[in-house]
Image 1 (cartoon, rainbow, N blue to C red):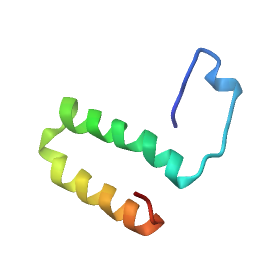
Image 2: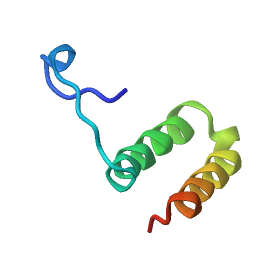
Image 3: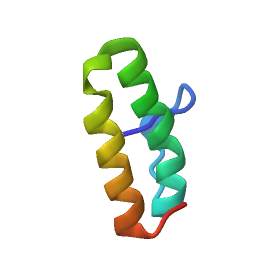
Image 4: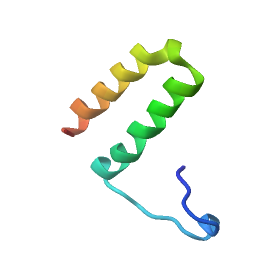
Length: 57
C-alpha cells in the first residue's frame, strides 16, 4: 500500500501496472540502498521480471 497525505485512510485508487511500477522502483531502491544492500541482485531480477511480464519500459 502506498500512502500520500494525512487522510490516506479515506481514499482508495486503482492504478495501472505502469503507474504502479513508477512507485515500485523508488521503494525498491530505498529497500536496497538503506536496508538490505545484500538483496540488490534479487530485487533487480524481480523488477526485470515484472517489466517483462507486463510489457513495461
